[in-house]
Image 1 (cartoon, rainbow, N blue to C red):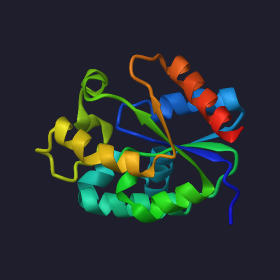
Image 2: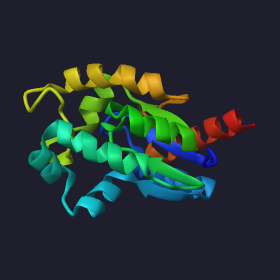
Image 3: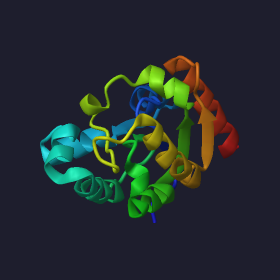
Length: 173
């Protein structure tokens, strides 16, 4: 059994998992793993091309396989927003790390996200799925898997990363 010494970031697209994750890794002196980039490298396609090629369900399967095989230590693991659709992957990530939900409000999400199509966002409900529907569908999943929830609304990336680091240190104390 792997040591539970990683920090796994989950949350909506645009919550800052990747950008905040890099800063958090520097603050905590951890490695940084961007799961989306791992998927792109292993499949040799952008996320959007993968989603176009496999469809949302196929992409979730690929993401699940890659996430459940991640071996890491003292790493910040930034997951894709759709990672919570994969129970097997989330169980593995919970075993190897503390799952931190970067929580943003719907209004903040609208401010941060301009084009879902460009970002490689998995829309289980199909292309016609609205941002509100996506938010409402995923929020309970993030809450279900979160061991720690950090509200990052209205915070700069650095301030949010410091807040997450402080909350983690308190939890580990």
